[in-house]
Length: 93
Image 1 (cartoon, helix red, strand yellow):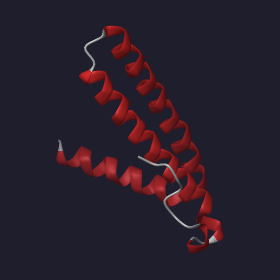
Image 2 (cartoon, one colour; image 1 turned 90 degrees about the horizontal axis):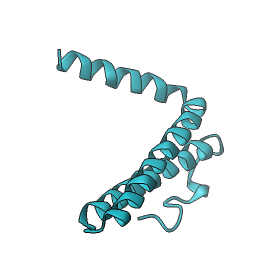
Image 3 (cartoon, helix red, strand yellow; image 1 turned 135 degrees about the vertical axis):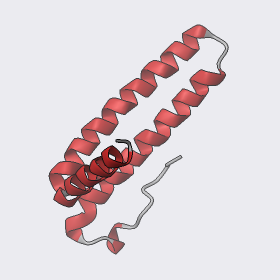
Image 4 (cartoon, one colour; image 1 turned 180 degrees about the vertical axis):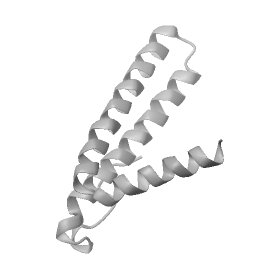
């Protein structure tokens, strides 16, 4: 779990700081999704389970928001995502 930014800004090129911030935010959201889904899975109370599942779903939206921003900042990321999709499609034909 993240409690502080896991990199030192001085070690990152100025033009890359925003991309790194967005990647950290995405990683934190995935961590939160995993935590909330695990908590929902072990809860024996439906009300608690329902709220954790709802919050996990909201975190998935946050991933989409941060990823949209990242794709605006890092055009190479777009190319790599498309390449990855193509590889999976070819493997699973």
